[in-house]
Image (cartoon, rainbow over the protein chains, first blue to last red):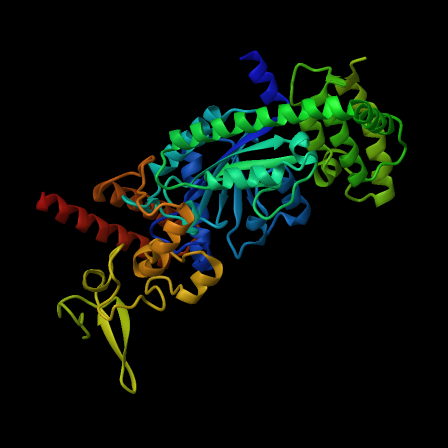
Length: 344
Length: 156
């Protein structure tokens, strides 16, 4: 069991639950007038305030590109919400972990993202929010089809459970294509890290359920659990093969990346991401270890170093590109050695 | 005053364009007659054996659904059922599937109660922002729901 848990810790980065809901009395967002969209925002604001205090509201048209991109980097809103017609709004919980997107593809998208492999915890939290909203709002629902959604691919439970996985072994051996084919036949989808239509970045893949009708939420979670464990085990096999076949070369690649990141004076974003991916690979293969007890500290650091998150954190929006790259290098030199050290 | 083409009693809410030789005839129906006459999930569509070109509730057309794979409202699942039900089957990979998960607040009474809560919130909101016309419209819809609840109560 301990082995299984450790396999999952170095393979699963985060777990996300999303429920799609619509209000019966209103057309879905593609056919919604501006006034109707605003009414849905009012109803959601009121319903959330009755459940809990501390929700922060973001009108995506009013917050500006930088804030919208920041929320997107934090996975609290989607590109579709930013590109939506009108009334696009996000409510984010006080702890910054739960968000409710209003007037995205559906009227409501309730979602929760948490580090690690925590399907049941994540579902419980989003389900309890949904119960509270369902007591106050009249959701579009049909006994045969379940919760009615703008896209028929979401009808039924409206639940999209997903896990973000780090799969360098499977990607490097070319196993991802087979994985996509195998699991798509079983009702799962493998996508890039920002969801539908996006490409993989840094060996990160999002695995999610495709089927939402005809299975209960419990069955979807168990199905996802089985798939994630199987994929994690396949990844471990490939990592062992990688070590056996090209261990020295891989170690050299990872150490060089670490060396550059901890000694550079100028660091472009894409270069940093490529190098951090190598460091993460080095952690997964045992060349490095994390100094912190928090197993997801490196992933959280990578998220903090994304362009908009970095500029907000370090107050660099007015700075030119070169100044940002110099500052990025300084932060990297300071933080990375505290997070990750060599094992030899 | 125009009355429903079918029951000749209620006010019409939906217009139905019937193609006839050389032109179009428009028939007006109340929602109840319209649903009874034309709609239900899994039915064979309207009396002409054709699905609708557009949902009468939200205006979503068959062409738009085909292009975007999105429906326009909850009623589209009925009004454009001939198009959408096969889409659901295709996307969900099994024709026999029915919902087995969590249920929404069930029963007409509870649904009315939730809609009433929504209208109450909106009436309060519109009063606060000084839009008394919309506040009054919400109030009237609440009263209509209450009349419906009383009627349903007597029926039981």
